Image (tube, rainbow, N blue to C red; front, side, top):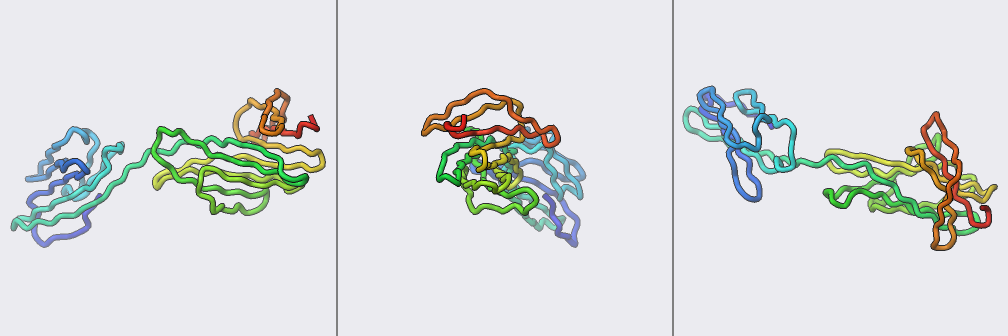
Length: 232
């Protein structure tokens, strides 16, 4: 936070306050070339420069959010006040993608993807992107935590990316989807992890059977096949 204004008279003092919903607290005061720190919340985290008209806060905390006011008093007792609003955000977590598979028509599968984050954290925003290999990715208009995509035979590998974000940070997870109509099977490859199962979709019941999946060392992907009960 920095004041860019220039004054024709010398400054007598500079005082920084923080105003929250509860109260107004004095943070630091600069007078007679001496800095006086007034609140333990900012202990060893403040740095002032340019005659205390620039305030730097290190290692930001959530409780640092609020309206900051800098009051400059000139030698003729004229006062100038400038306000700054600071909002501190937590880093967002890496989301977990949860897939639910359902067979649609004979030539199309529908896959529902849910982007999951811990519920004990502040709310985040969602974005979805999808695309095929060697093509531009498209941004979905869906801003919810769940999206449904359809897969057609021989449509190629589709990558679906879930992005969770707030104004200060973002993280993402992705999954690759592929529908192979020739073998009547549906496969999903996950970017991380070396534990894999085959999922046999039978109505509302999902059975998991251990099998040997294919590990792609060049990309670090695990490919997992999901077949119809008739093809097991």
